[in-house]
Length: 394
Image (tube, rainbow, N blue to C red; front, side, top):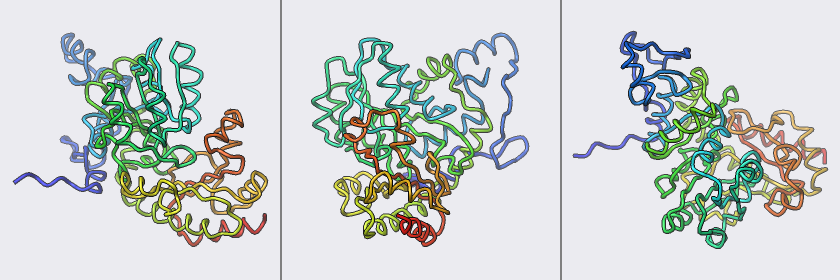
């Protein structure tokens, strides 16, 4: 009889974690060291050649980092994972490893601001062209593909509009034309969706967000084939240096152990808040995939196990109304990150996406009055009461 696959909660809590063989310690040790001693020259040569042979220098990896990578690979359903100091370090290391002068990328026109800047500015300096399209319509992606297209890159749900992209649809097109696919799945986490199982090549997470979960650590993760992860490690991670520290890796390991219980509470809270907003007379629009009114609700049900903790909405009165609300919130925290146990709220047009030209920003759905809310684990009644008292100030 085939061994039963362990559930997500068990994997998130226990995968990759083994008691220390020397002391019996259950918690993952923090190997706070930059160097590792070799038995002899030959041993050093082997370990410097490949991390598969052991550790030589923490810029290439550490035992604490390895535990994190094994855990994420298992819960994401991939062969291997690679950890970085930040999500942007993970994204840039992947792109600078797989792209070269003359290549072309098709990228979602709604994405994290630093990702947009990377494609639109930094990679352009090195001769990589990018076409930004609305990837929520797969036909837009098909039309944008050229003979030199090397990668299709998108987010789903997208930052900050929570717009969705058909993961299987993109994977099918890419495989037919031998194009690499990469998806930033930070908003969803592996608890909600696993893009590798739907045909995507590389999954990206900003571990700063839901993986860490407590607003006290930064990190980034790539998940894919072992061959690709080794290539990125030896190519750009090693030589560009976006290395995660052992203590940061430890904090993310600890955060992942409660990922399922946090996400269940966060998703439940987000649905209650989205329904409250949808019925409020001062709210113009609500964007949450879990609502039947969301234009991509059926797609969300097909490729997501739940609907996430990110809720976006537009108030009647636009920018001025949004500023009034955010300046009068008492429980929700005004901050630009997400995925915390605390509820965080921000205004993309003036904060995270301020440098994107207004016309371009509005075209992608980031309007002047859009508010992005990262729902936490507080009691939902308290969050709703906080929003209500702030709405009264409009």
